[in-house]
Length: 234
Image 1 (cartoon, rainbow, N blue to C red):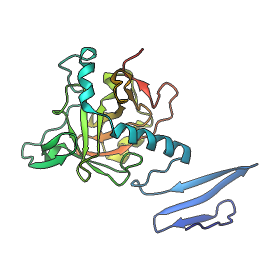
Image 2 (tube, rainbow, N blue to C red; image 1 turned 60 degrees about the vertical axis):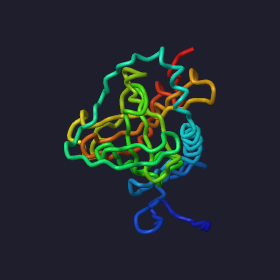
Image 3 (cartoon, rainbow, N blue to C red; image 1 turned 180 degrees about the vertical axis):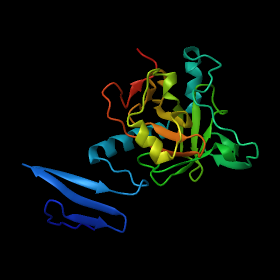
Image 4 (tube, rainbow, N blue to C red; image 1 turned 90 degrees about the vertical axis):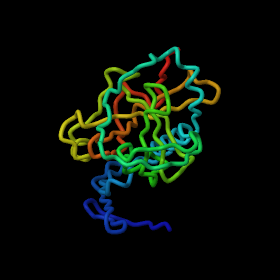
């Protein structure tokens, strides 16, 4: 359905019960819109959405087996920058995956990411696994889609001075008490048969509250970062 409406500055359009769009201002041919939406909706400019969606689809196709060729570039024992917060009474579940077969997942390894990665916004429940690949790489496996998984890494391992913008806002959204409660992950893309050209999306990290295991996608606006950062420089 397409609906074309004429609105004056300050007037509001409602989409359902929870999304509002208001005309904030106009200058020449440019229109400023103010959008309010629940956190489960990713609000992005169309060109950014299309770009991130294409990147995430490529990342989801990455073959973990290609990481063996990169072993010389990474130490065998790499401590986590933000280790998980264990829960002694955590239960186990069995999970069937396309890339790793049947695996066992602890309940405290399950995270809820709302909204999900761009292009997979309805995929919100993942297992964050650090025992399927050699450090520093981890796997983010969707519980509802056996074929959907991402290879992720804590950005400090590849970009030591990495920082999240608007950290206080992110902490508030995830109900974190301190920055140490947060764990940042970036999605890796491994081109087929060209593992040394692996890239990391530094502009679109996933940030997780390690205690509540609740996360969100963050889109940064920082010129120092790239959505296709070469992990292994030429």
